[in-house]
Image 1 (tube, rainbow, N blue to C red):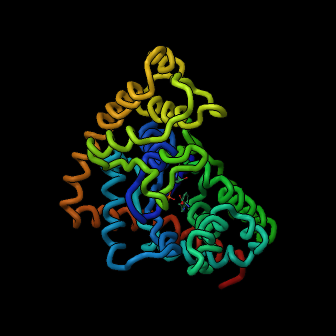
Image 2 (cartoon, rainbow, N blue to C red):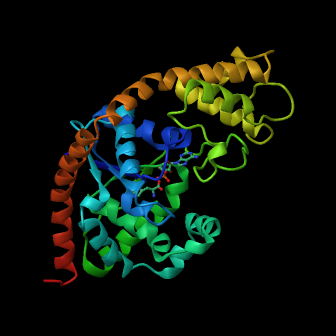
Length: 327
Ligand code: AMP
Ligand code: TRP
């Protein structure tokens, strides 16, 4: 049996190149490697922890589904599903809440960041977010979880909850490992000290931006002092970030790129980078706009995937109920 691999993305707006290079592109590569039994899902329950408009949610869910498929996820190779269609996720999350120390959740960077950002909506869901994420992962006997660097703390908690549960109730869960890409933390175009985040849309390069928007955003991206196109995270964080984006999309190594741009200025490099980004996403944009026109097809793929995932999840939750004496 191939090892299980799972990951999810929240349907809460457009995907940026950080989501793509930290997560989605890797999902596709891992799926196509044929080495894993892959599950990818739309983390719609997680997305309720941030301010949202219920009228927008169905569109966001189907748009993320179109992103998945246009980027190359394939329902014949992976189980693609919607978290909220499988009640076992919330049920296991509740059970795991009962072995989760509040103190561990209070330390979570994402909780602290989001509490500052949405001061008027510091809800219990936001606090318990990592517990639901642990449930998503542990339900499927997962070995590997491809995510961006910002999720490592949540994976640490997932392992800790698996250990706590196993110790208390007998061996039930595996401890999963993260899989990171070469660019696990893509930085903001406006401030290379901060990660690219959809909470600051002006700092993001979205993967379905038009060629014109891509050119404009890259032209305006902050650069460092000096003029040399060189990877030096400490002294040239902005150019280093752009070089990493270039290298991940073009497949050229950073040192090859540095050589290519010796004696050339930042704007020549930025021009080249814009061309690489536009070319890389041309096919994606075409596929996505065709997919988005057929919403009922997107939804039926999601329902079929959710039924497959539910079979696995329901078995595990039955085992959990038995272990904790709910029978
Ligand atoms: P989210 O949109 O928060 O559901 O994130 C989806 C995936 O993108 C997660 O695996 C994140 O770790 C990853 N991600 C988000 N922002 C970045 C970033 N700036 N660089 C790399 N990966 C990221
Ligand atoms: N928390 C993840 C994020 O914000 C999304 C997510 C929810 C997830 N459940 C998961 C990722 C399970 C991996 C595995 O990006």
